[in-house]
Amino acid sequence: MSKVLIIGAGGVGQVVTHKCAQRRDIFSEITLASRTKAKCDAIAAQLGGSIKTAQVDADNVPELVALIKQVQPKLVINVALPYQDLHIMDACLETGVDYLDTANYEPLDTAKFEYSWQWAYQERFKEKGIMALLGSGFDPGVTNVYTALAAKKYLDVVEELDIIDANAGSHGQPFATNFNPEINIREVTATCRHWENGAFQESPPLSTKRVFDFPEGIGPMNIYRLYHEEMESLVRHIPTIKKAQFWMTFSDNYLKHLEVLQNVGMTRIDEVEYNGQKIVPIQFLKALLPDPGSLGR
Image (cartoon, rainbow, N blue to C red; front, side):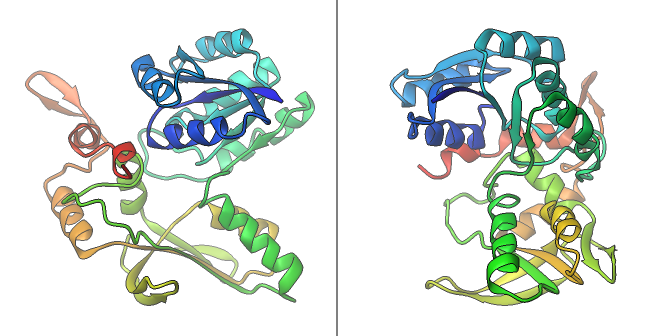
């Protein structure tokens, strides 16, 4: 049994905290921290106050270091924003604590996510004798495990890989995202990349479409090709792969709203001036959209 520090109190942070609380044989003491402590307290209340909460600015390495030293966890689980990955990794390096995240680093001012920035930490973590487990969510995460299992146990060779993610539920909202809207929209609207002929090939976002007949009563749905980070690690560690693609389902309603938002500039990630103040349109949009943490209730 050991202590865990979870950083990030959004929709994913809520799920992770609940899951950890279900395994007290592993996570004997849970601390949930975020820039807004009230969000942490709300999640703690769902669990009957059985976890501790704290305030921390995940962009501030000294603050992170101080909190880690105070809590003394065996593991830091980072479910904050991808822009903050490197700051939290720096704090783990300074304090000698293992690190885990669910999504790779992405610069705040560029809608491009890849592992190169985090993989550059490999030797420093190795020298420190600590672990950094990257992309340990569902996709990436479970998808990597399934692919590795198939390659090692069931298939002679893996040459083509298609990962297909179905958003088959219904939340009853005109437009909503199933995780942080800012990150979701940046991901979906980024230039598509897929692996073929020994290199990543680029194409316009959502420009390649197919119909896939899903099992278990879901049925046929439109799937669209986009870039997802697990392809980067999978083609590196399973070099026999000649072609790798990631697909996701989107409803016509979602795509219609997304197109309009793009056309009017609401998905922009750069600052604009409004009434004498600088705002980032996509961050303003995030404030208007439904909280992903509320969609499954």
